Length: 560
Image 1: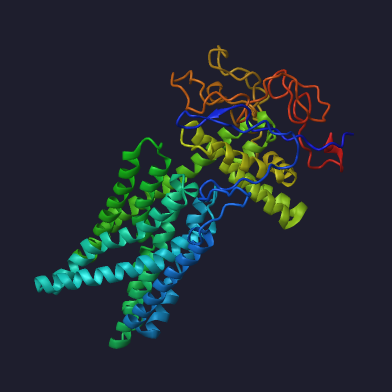
Image 2: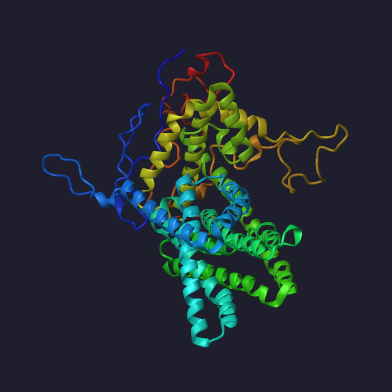
């Protein structure tokens, strides 16, 4: 039995072209070894030119990520301290504690809901923490100060305090609050662009920011209500605290997230747009912000018309829009899973992935089963490796999808190689687990009735009947693993269905998942005699078709 290390395929060979059409050196012929390439410096960190003596480039202290994070944390902490003093002065210590205890109840549920939407490709936790802190501290402080100042100025100018309060709640508050919350989305869109590429990213970032803002606002309103009850002696179900809790926490905990999610959708559409569509990339966020302000103003204005107006707006606008946004978010998540299943088979042909992996990686249930399998057989380190493998594979599929649309950027090859190297380093734990998960979740072939006709009609060929009655493709996903549509096998090939040329990534050779040009040149150590992923071409495990990894084989049996 062979004991040589498993060969490592190359993602691309030959020159490629960047999005602007300028020739650039593509990934060089990679040595087919298991050792990863030397680490590459992140392209978005500015460096100084190295000296003549080979001194490494130096980064100015104010440009270092740790300094920026510390400075941002200090600003948010200062905003939180000032806000705490203002809210405590407004509600009193006891009212503040009561408001804090009641306002925190919906927060875990809302955060869990937004993280559930982000399960396909979850973003880093630091973004979640930043968004919540920005909404709870910075956005809330800016809104309190700006709303109070504007309302007092209108009251002094018009000598009508009641009218000033109405204008402040229906006009000023929606504009100020939605702008303050949208600033967090804008910051991540500008400075964390690699982590903000999809519609779901905008929804999650906006929802978490608004959840933090609603948390602080609920503390203020519930604390005031408790203070009023203490002053007038109200208690029980008829108290102002219970009424405020029911209206803000029970009936409408999603109100602020619903408004700000419209802004997040605008930024998500801008993130998905091609770089050349500059007007759309500006109008989409502005349109989402204006819609958020309008819905927020309608919601605040409903209280002016009394209880019936509140219920009418709640039933006619808030609930339908909330349901529509839930459908949109779930649809976007399913579309992401479909993208994973469509893009990863190209890497099966190149030998980076095994045949069952695209199906397993495109199913959240299969992913969970794979992590459970790895945890049962290898402990927490194996489960962590499978989770990282899934994350990098998803990022790779999204990157390839953006490349097919001309939105990948000039660092496409570098980022692709980084994801592939990270997956290759974790393949020992991930491949058996994903194979097991694919087998457990694959649809079962239909069993025909013993007396049923073998044909659906008198002309089976005309109706496109499958070759074998009751059989379904492996794992139930077209096209077959290792095969991709002809117009997507290479960037730059024309689409025969639409007659449009592909995105300008040049004409790479056998790269980005396309098999080697010379037939029968597989360098694996297996002894298979099949035809390989493409007839006449070798696979990563031998000169024939790739040998499937058997997770229940004896030690050393899978080496050959």
